Amino acid sequence: MTENQQEKELKSTGYELFILLLSLVSVFNLILIWIDYFYSISPLTMGVLEIINAILTVFFLFDFTYRLLTASSKSNYFFRNWGWADLLACLPQLRIFRVFRIFRAARLLRIFGVQNMVNEIVNNRAGIALFITIFGIIVIAEIVGVFMLKVEASYPNANITTSGDAVWWTFVTMTTVGYGDRFPVSPWGRVLAVFVMLSGVALIGVLASFLSNFFLGAPKKKENEYEPTDPRAKLGELKSLLEQMQAAEVELVEKITELEQML
Image (tube, rainbow, N blue to C red):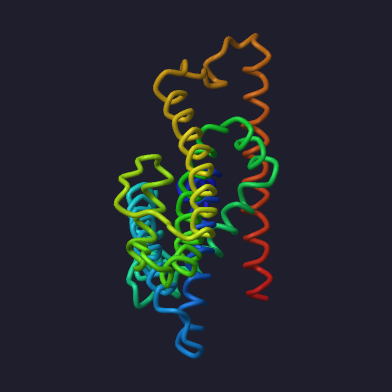
């Protein structure tokens, strides 16, 4: 894979980490679904997992479309870089193919390099915060939905009794909307409600800060836009040279590996 192809395949560090984490959650849910076939987990719990998996499928379908449209070679992405597996993984019956997303994300991040990852996270905190917020909302919706049903479903006068009720209530509470159509009545349910409310305030606060920074923040100058005598311009030039050297080193290692396999 050439340097240009690597850059096209590798999206931002935050995005790759986000897809990696979503893939891990999806595979974990798939394992629980398999366990259910043998040990019969609560139908309410399985209902929550299926709802979250449906939400994850939307993200994975977007990821496939995004990678296909931005690939330097669409056929190369689809046939050689597991694009076909990404597409099949969007089907509920073939979610096992999401394992390939984990391996690819890990490979891309390894190619990018730990130091480059750290630099991007430091320099692009707002973007990273956005992905963390979305991931946090999904994970909290799943965990709280499962535990809320365990403490509420059999409680007298409870109105959160189905998987859809639990996930709906969690999302509504986290976004601080609070329709009031569903609410916990058990003591432990109210404890979970406090946790969801505090988490929602924190996550929505982060999201609001990102949007404010995105729409109102002054545009940052790129390092190649500074005057040639500006130290920041020289720093950008050195970073570019370092990235080229790292990419060349990775490509050289791959070619050596290919030759060793041929011998």
